[in-house]
Length: 404
Ligand code: ADP
Image (cartoon, rainbow, N blue to C red; front, side, top):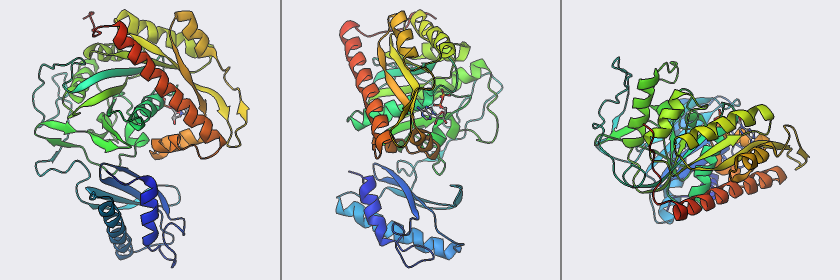
């Protein structure tokens, strides 16, 4: 059992702040933390200009208190990463203890380089093998693709929160960031300080917020544009999905690239999908694009689990609701196409902020009125998806793709 967010915050009261005599929590310098299976990441904002020695002292105190707290819970600290940030949230220094990934003496850093052969091999990974199992990926029971007619409607946001929400219900969940042209997960899951590792020829997923995540964004140089042509993109996606050591998963959620172009289409064909979720905002123009995405899945014989309406309405921090985009538009579209409606997610400042700082768990904490509405909306989407998947398994004996 790992430490909960509350237990980390409690333990951090044992770390003295810089430069004041208070502890880091009382001084408001403990910004946030995330933990998964003994791997802990803590963000701190010391005041003034601490020296390296000051940061070392804070880091070793943090290690001491968190190690003691984990031992008290009967576990140990597998790794600890401490990020020191300034007022703007930029990381100014880092300290690390232990491996940031699943600990292994055989680990190596994976560095894929797109080759000129029209394919992007990831060196050190074992050759692609023929997969077995209902999803085509060994150990993975269900694969759900999240697609959208166009970018910016919140597809990645829905994919991530669906994954985290399912994990909070006790499912084992993986998230594959398939948006290879603009991967969002390094930011949305705060993977900055973690390194991609390969072990025995398989990529090790990042263990964060109770899910396992893999993203091309951590395998290529983040500052270089990803100018990949079609076949290279498909090759990289295939490797990411099949050569990540997912282990046993109840759900693998795939964040597809936006649109109905060649890349999204081929990716949707590469795996045996249990179903697809289409994300749409309420406006008419968005509905038309989303309808095209739904039809793309149907033409590929992929079962459309339903439509999520994102940015349905705006909820201020005071809980007041503003109907900005014409709430209900996506629900009507779903009705028109005979598709299940999986719920509406409001626009909230917190959802955007939590995505930017990589803390999706906070979306499920419901601290104020807006937060409560957001939590309820996300949990409703998770329930609807679970229900639709259950219906699918009753009505279909192993969905498969037939178009090549
Ligand atoms: P897409 O994957 O469709 O391109 P993203 O999920 O990356 O879209 O979302 C685009 C931006 O909008 C992100 O900054 C995200 O945090 C923000 N966002 C998405 N949905 C919401 C929402 N319901 N409320 C507030 N911000 C949102």
